[in-house]
Length: 271
Ligand SMILES: C[S@@+](CC[C@H](N)C(=O)[O-])C[C@H]1O[C@@H](n2cnc3c(N)ncnc32)[C@H](O)[C@@H]1O
Image (cartoon, rainbow, N blue to C red; front, side, top):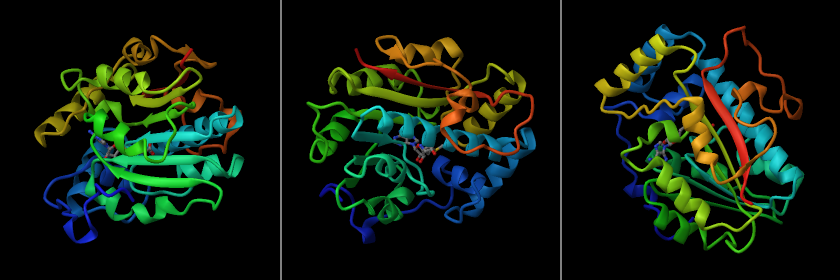
């Protein structure tokens, strides 16, 4: 791991407040969460019982988009907002297609760092690395990731289920532009993002739950999600609900009903 990451005995886990990475882990059926995370998870579940399905659908999008990128020649990935390791992780998908793939993971939650060993089991031909940093500090991410990734060659920037935790005031659009400015033509942006477009009332109540715990929930409309791709060429089918983004590339996701999953997903290429 990079020299800047805190040492294991310096990792401090805040068990008094819920954290997005740990709530997501709880929704996915993981064990790396605390009672505060479960408590808020249950409140969100009471608003919409489909949240665990949404988490699985989102994760399955990440798998398919990574597979598509690797199948289309991408060999370097910068995954920000990685989450607690859940198999298969991004590098396992990429390295299944191309064992030489190089992957840098990044998250700001110390619990992800505490479990990062699972992210570092690369193929011998490839490389994986973990950087503890906040996406709102792209300079540090670029500097640290640059020790492993060659920014003169295409990189897929993966921001899956991350940007709804970053408000416009915190520079969500600017930081994506800043990261994209660092990578050459032929690089990609892949992301998924929660929206209030389909379930405005439930989304508003979820927003209140986040706000009550001083957590950001910046739900964005389809146009607002598309804005992250305004200088890119969208890969077919464009900005779609996550389960409709190239479903043929992956495993079926069980438990869906007729109501759309309240999110969007897309992949775009830097011209
Ligand atoms: C919902 S999880 C998504 C995990 C994974 N990308 C996936 O889609 O399966 C969101 C992750 O973003 C991380 N995150 C939230 N805000 C962040 C920030 N400002 N900087 C870096 N990571 C952040 C959280 O710690 C969490 O691990």
